[in-house]
Amino acid sequence: MSHVAAEIATQPECWSQALELKPEGLPEPGERVAVVGCGTSLYIAQAYAALREDAGLGETDAFAASAFPAARRYDRVLAITRSGTTTEVLDALRRTRQTSGTATTAITGDLDTPVATAAGTVVDLSFADEKSVVQTRFATTTLALLRGHLALAAADLPDQARRAVEEELPEGAVAAEQFTFLGTGWTVGLAHEAALKLREASGSWTESYPAMEYRHGPVSISAPGRVVWFFGEPPAGLVDQVRATGATVVRSGLDPLAELIRAQRLAVALAGARGLDPDRPRNLTRSIILAQP
Image (cartoon, rainbow, N blue to C red; front, side, top):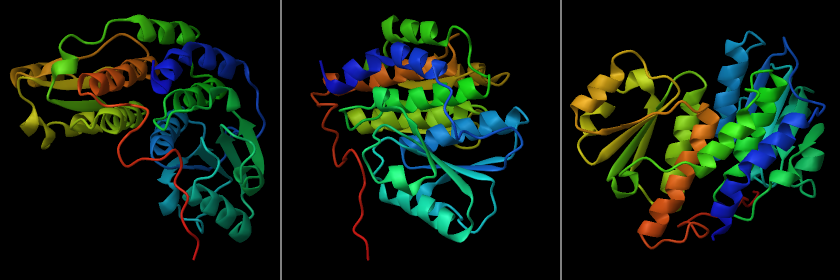
């Protein structure tokens, strides 16, 4: 079994542990918050930002760390970084502390890294760290933790994760030519992450959008032999429109975060079907560390 497949299977236990944590430094109600990350961590940041703001707990923006406007005023900057070494995240944290004195918190999988001193407060998720280059359990465990802190995690979330680990993959998905992932609100970030997982592990042709944007162009590529996968409840009438193209519709009653596990598993299955090693994704490394000028 690949590292990534083994790590995918441990997510129910990781989520249970995360939901028991009460860490310091996470955003409090009313704080104006920026969340930064790169790659998978950016998409988790987007999901959290939408959840928190929609719940009326405070303005919350998500940024790619490289595009973070450090001069903008926030009460707290929250960084998500599995490795604790990603150059853009460390730079965003340091610039924030140097220019504004804003409170900073980092969620990481490795405390023995530069992020431990770059952030004012560090949340330890080392129990969810990974050997794989392709992120799975660290990202979802981070979002489970953050949802729990917002009191927006279903009581049976780990049980739903177990179902997602064990259920059959969507029929015909491994043979599909192309995948479009759609979400609404906080699940847009999950749709982007699902698409990224398939690209990383299997080199698949994937796209992702807010669901209401599907009609504004993306529908043009839907056809028989292709998949349109919804995270959360589809907008009214959209499922029928997708089916009219001949594409396969995937939707489920699982919590959208648990549904992401099924997309992760599909990414590994696609890699295997194509003779690829999901632990050695093309052109990728576990962390991006840039040479400093």
